[in-house]
Length: 134
Image 1 (cartoon, rainbow, N blue to C red):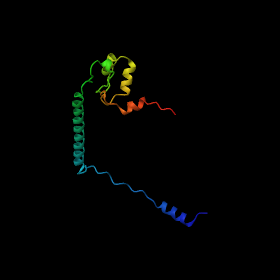
Image 2: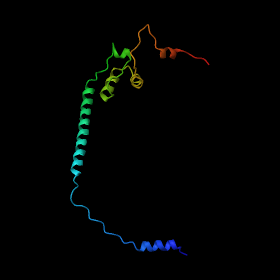
Image 3: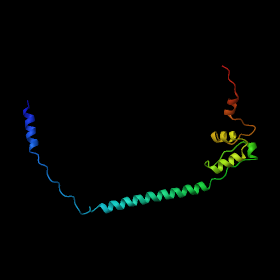
């Protein structure tokens, strides 16, 4: 059994007549060229920043020097590269290293501080020698 509210709503829906939409304007908007100019200016500025950054990185990477070692590289056991690892630097490290394991260990755990003199000790090295019995 329909309720009076449902009948009124159905009568209202029967009166619905769709309207034809207005046609889209064919002329361009007055401020669109300005927005395009601003967008192009931002894109040009971003491209300039990227180019300047790339040139700066190229210049900076050209200043990195080869690893410096004191004495014989094989006797020192220090093969820490200052440049990113490449095939050329990996081949050079493998050619001068006493073993493959030494190169892998050095690349995995590079030394970060210069070696200490004979009269000084590293706290970490000293604690590493300590044997604790529980």
